[in-house]
Length: 440
Ligand code: IFM
Image (cartoon, rainbow, N blue to C red; front, top):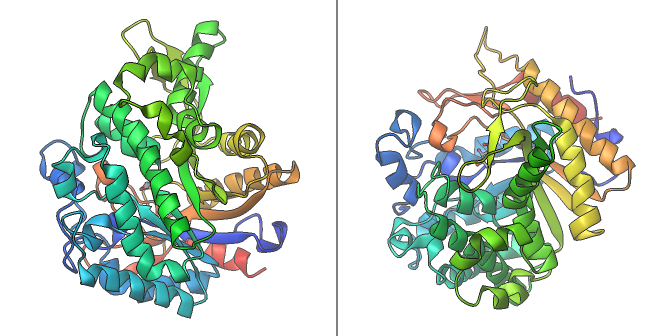
């Protein structure tokens, strides 16, 4: 059972579940074009067992049943994403089947009384655009603007909310500096350019949607709390640097119109020419901010080369990802975001959840660890609301077990178990717990 029910949250508080296109749809269906994740996965050593999103959960054909699961559990909203490579296989030319799919998906949500909360880009860049430099190329802002208009020209009239890009830190730093996600680069200049271009594309997309007359537009940033590994001033400085790279760069760009000083110091030479002039676009006004939160990192100083910090293993209980369970971080981000960046703008928790080595026993999946995780994090949301934070919704990650990127299908984040051989869905105890809590 969940400890909290719907009535423990303010009236109108939105409960939803989130997924993303490449992770569940089945990229081989419906005329989608090659995406950079197909290429990344096909390169040995990048993804566990070289798995890709070709079939995934086959949500492309089973979306009706999946939406039924959301509705039956009593969720109000569905946070989904639209695949660029499905809608525009070469990044520029429209695939009618792709647009038709999102049209059907939208109507199916509305028929079930679910609010469609779209994210335009959750990482499946068409390979044809990656060939042209992808996020390193400034033109991506205009390409993404065109994609935005194409998708929202078709389904924008029925969206409850839209965010352009899921987790800019992952798009830029994880993928171009750490090399853990597609395109797998480890290149400081590529990273700096991607960091700036992802925000420029975000702002361009917002402007294009305003041009279509759309409202309720926001952003979705992932946040990871940085705790100094010890009491030294060096550890405090290392954690602050990590915080700048991971969290503050994106919030500061969008809401303050500047980048943190430490990052300008480290990356300034690599930002594209004229980057200072892009803030009017990057700062296109928003209606809400979405935070994705999972864990914290313990950060210690490092005398080695830049970026002068390293991660230390923490003592707290961990999820299947090896991530510490630290709900205080969610509370602190919710408070800090309003206080330092967004004022009274509505905040949504747009992702929160855990991977767990779930198994079916006697036809059921007893994921009590996940229920406990949700309890702790919903408690953190409640505490922040009680202290005055303007939090208007919470979306669990994820509805279904799915493709966890470089970790393939091994890590299970779903409230619904997916057998990846038969594709059969089995609601877990956490799904039943939400069903019970949302009815009361
Ligand atoms: O599965 C991912 C998702 O695509 C983006 N946010 C974090 C999730 C868990 O790692």
